[in-house]
Image (cartoon, rainbow, N blue to C red; front, side, top):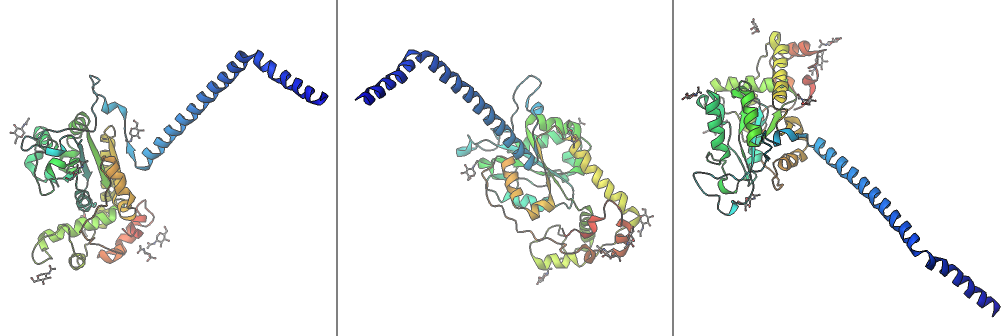
Length: 342
Ligand SMILES: *[C@@H]1O[C@H](CO)[C@@H](O)[C@H](O)[C@H]1NC(C)=O
Ligand SMILES: *[C@@H]1O[C@H](CO)[C@@H](O)[C@H](O)[C@H]1NC(C)=O
Ligand SMILES: *[C@@H]1O[C@H](CO)[C@@H](O)[C@H](O)[C@H]1NC(C)=O
Ligand SMILES: *[C@@H]1O[C@H](CO)[C@@H](O)[C@H](O)[C@H]1NC(C)=O
Ligand SMILES: *[C@@H]1O[C@H](CO)[C@@H](O)[C@H](O)[C@H]1NC(C)=O
Ligand SMILES: *[C@@H]1O[C@H](CO)[C@@H](O)[C@H](O)[C@H]1NC(C)=O
Ligand SMILES: *[C@@H]1O[C@H](CO)[C@@H](O)[C@H](O)[C@H]1NC(C)=O
């Protein structure tokens, strides 16, 4: 009995002080909860920001806040709702459209890359529209052409018309891009056009492709027609039979020049929303194509192309004066071009 009372007493002793200071305890609990809350929030925020940083670096997208904001503080976004003059966007009128331009150099895989993009049901990449001199003769004809493309009023076999979610074309750097870079970058920033840079790391392989393609322009190895891209291994083999001779005196300066052009282009469009891709990476790493689709805000699909690579295997099999070239590049910054297999 005594024990039981004692316990009861103890209980009451324990409970009573608790009842005496409920406000103090509640305050302590509340304070603790607040501190915890603030701490958890700050940790979460940190994680979110590092996550997004990593993602952005991974896909090599450089987005700057400045071009998105106009001088009058208007938001220029990369998402558009064009209103074509030649047709109505029908059921897709409420789908946003992105504007892009593939900026590249001849024989860097841009033809292949463009067929991949165009295999997407929502992409219209309209080819090398500035290969026609008239369209790039001055900046006003360039802007007129661009306006028409981005208003969806430019028609090619690639046009998906009403349900395009990304519209663009491919543009070689020597087709007015470098010459009018200032105005073009302004246009891109003002209209919210994203640039997709596509370069080739191995500039020696690019050179071989340029020389062979230029030879075929006259020689027309495939039954008397000149082809820059082929769709079968037989055609590829026929074209690869021709081994160009590379002028070793000019080799280093030619490689350097191509390198400088690419670097300058990146500088010129540094403030434009862009992504930088390399042909070799696209071949080796299929997830790069997903990065491009994400960059263009597209639903991700498997992209396919029927094009076949022309110069396969070791480069030494494709150059007439290989020993000479080997010697010229030995010990230079371009030595690795001799070995790489792409
Ligand atoms: C640009 O070229 C077009 C076509 O040659 C010409 O009609 C136009 O006047 C030129 N514009 C300027 C600003 O030079
Ligand atoms: C893509 O195209 C399909 C078929 O034309 C269409 O149904 C769909 O809405 C389009 N998607 C986007 C994001 O525009
Ligand atoms: C050239 O034409 C012939 C007959 O028309 C055809 O059998 C052959 O495959 C063609 N060759 C190439 C390289 O296209
Ligand atoms: C290489 O180019 C230089 C300069 O244009 C020229 O003088 C030389 O003859 C060329 N060499 C060959 C083998 O074509
Ligand atoms: C782009 O601009 C940033 C900052 O202005 C600079 O750090 C970076 O080197 C530039 N990149 C190129 C390719 O010019
Ligand atoms: C490459 O350079 C190294 C030294 O720089 C030399 O020993 C070697 O023989 C060279 N190879 C060729 C193919 O010229
Ligand atoms: C370049 O020449 C050297 C010496 O003849 C040879 O060992 C090397 O394999 C050559 N490199 C290539 C890529 O052909």
